[in-house]
Length: 296
Image 1 (cartoon, rainbow, N blue to C red):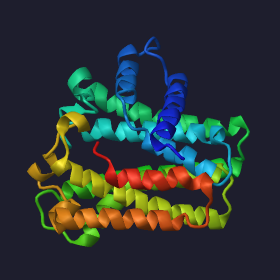
Image 2 (cartoon, helix red, strand yellow; image 1 turned 90 degrees about the vertical axis):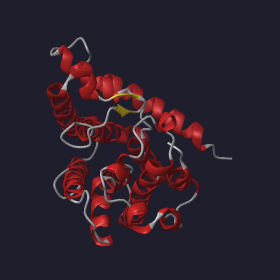
Image 3 (cartoon, rainbow, N blue to C red; image 1 turned 45 degrees about the horizontal axis):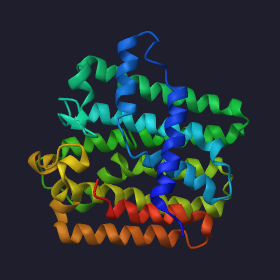
Image 4 (spheres, one colour; image 1 turned 60 degrees about the horizontal axis):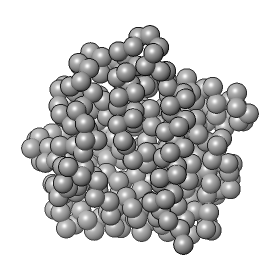
């Protein structure tokens, strides 16, 4: 029987070991910058994005090792976004993953630069993955997918519309725009990158894209719900902040019960998208269920 928790534990260990290797050490100048980068990178995140990269590569029969540079790069981009999201100019949060946020420890200027550096290091890592024997055209396609997911048409754009929508009544189309870009885009890019690096054909890539779209949105709906019903000690971050700032969320627009129904529907859509895959896609199936049932 497949043990998801053991799978997540093993993959997290592999990703963490690789991140330790590819990130500049704290003994590398400038010391304060690299300490700040590592502080947030190794603050105990779930590593969902890199694990999705590796699981998607395995689902199409590929070697997860070849997808590891993209896995690490996506976690760097995600971590940079968290450092910047927590800043006073944006969400102004004090805690992240159970620890003081980056700017609370290192100051706002260093936190901004640590985020900038992690984003840049991610693309250094992605562009160097060709040297590991990966097909050049595939690497270029992966870089393009990740860059678009992180930029103005993806995560950054979603964050802007999210901030502009605070305290306003918005419709479902705007809420969907925010969620599919602010959170969903990077999760989808994780799946698509793993699929390509694992050697997916177009039919497999399309099916995994549908899976990634549904799972990415389900993740954010679940996050919205946890901000209301979650326990701060378990979550490791401030709760109730979305409601306090009048943020656009599924519970705010639909109510808590209907938001939960929506998360379950998205989980079913994700699993249905994997109908053409065998046991090799079992980690992805169970991750979709984990995304909507998690408590942190």
